[in-house]
Length: 147
Image 1 (cartoon, rainbow, N blue to C red):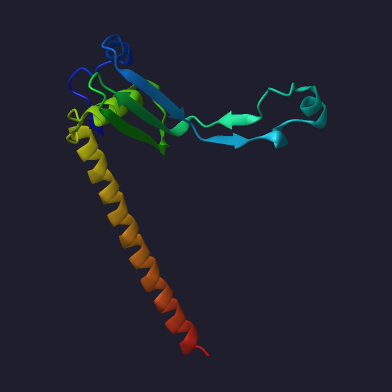
Image 2 (image 1 turned 180 degrees about the vertical axis):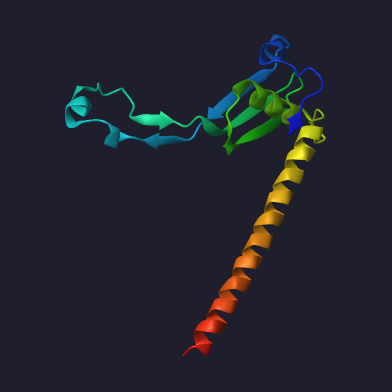
């Protein structure tokens, strides 16, 4: 988990300083013409989109040209497993562009407890697999002996 600990300069603040700032957002989409009947497709105006924007995943790119003419670029990518958060992603991209610190959060006690539970369940599953595997071997020995 990434954490931003200090205030990130806003796009408005940077523009007030005379900096040029461009923020680009990309969200994955799917074309869903199969969700519409033929009549509904005919009724859609030409400028209406059939694209569905996914709630997860995305990319934000920030391009900054500061008062001295130096260009900075930063990106943040959202996994397809995570819900897209426009504000957090923009702040993260700005911080990367400007070289500001970004900290990784230490796991919380709840995270550690969850990891221990997952490991315990995996160990139980492995034990069960080994038990079933032994039973199958015994069954095959008995079946081969009775031939």
